[in-house]
Length: 438
Ligand code: NAD
Image 1 (tube, rainbow, N blue to C red):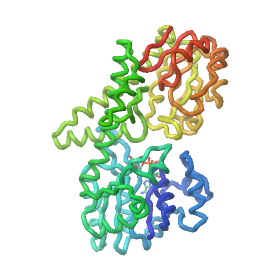
Image 2 (tube, helix red, strand yellow):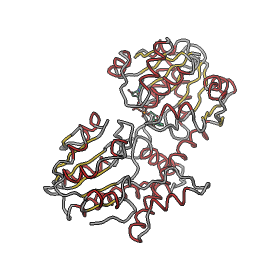
Image 3 (spheres, protein in one colour):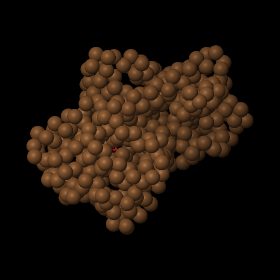
Image 4 (cartoon, rainbow, N blue to C red):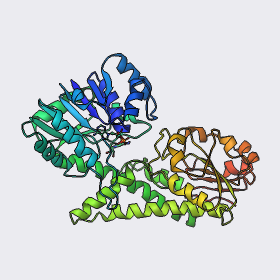
């Protein structure tokens, strides 16, 4: 089957590559010439482990290609996926659907034969019906169906998540569209991964409800962490004890500096906005959004305490600025709130991140980028661990402490312990939701 993929970002590129690995013929389209030129040279514009090998294999097999020319990409395709961005619209929290709708119009103008227009982008409930109207208006004679196929994978583990999903959600209106979608995902169906077929609205809602629920889980444990700090409980033990309950589960129960990334912040805002539009306020989600902001502010207070009340003239080393490990994605990372507060408070900030510099250079003005954690901490007054990259999980803490001017550690991902810090010679250690020492 021939498939066209509109958008070669984090979602479109991984989906396109994986569909081609299923054996489909996939043409990926993007408007950004720099991305297409890179991809044509076999280079990957994003950092996603394993993607380079899978891409090269399928290009070599002649199943995967890249173009800026949408009409040629959809010529003969039975399905075209829209995987363009849906960022927060300025001012009102709503998802900006302009990229989706203009992709839909472009498809409508270029298509001649029956095809299924599949929205993979995260879009508010009702959007697929709008896509249908847009296409009908632009090309009234076109025989087509729409389908909703939201994406649930995690950046950094995207290929594995795509190949071994917990479930695939497909929202359709017709049997014909359902058959096309079934054919696309046949390799997963054969391996007995569940594929749930729903109506369009339910598929759209599943995505937002899932993300809002996960953001709630993270925020819940972050709030419990604050109470643990006050009461002497240890949030790591608490989340372990909670997570062993099968009804709760142990995932997304790690206390940290607040959620960030390309999905949770914008999707919680969009769900809250949809609730307002339909006069069903999403009170829990709205609260999650505001508590998450407080969590980030609480981290800044914690760092300030470790700097004796002021960042001014302090040298602070920050390890990790991407919103999570194994990605170069900086969108709405907690670092974008925390690091500017340090710089703004008069600190000299040195930053080390295995993949974050390319994106981070423009987003974090005034910091010094260093490529090695041991160089980063040289003469620092405080070390802050913000992202739990593997590279930072087994640091030689003694060596770190020796290199620092005042060996103080803010471990905002709870990688180390009071014992580790004391043994290494740190004079202060704070983490999230656990007792520290000063
Ligand atoms: P992205 O910004 O990385 O990529 C979007 C790409 O689409 C860009 O390369 C852009 O140039 C291209 N584009 C925009 N309009 C186009 C057009 N008309 N024709 C061709 N190309 C066009 O976005 P992303 O992170 O891949 O996210 C895409 C969607 O998937 C969003 O709705 C997001 O919420 C959702 N999603 C993302 C993730 C994730 O991990 N990033 C996970 C699940 C769902």
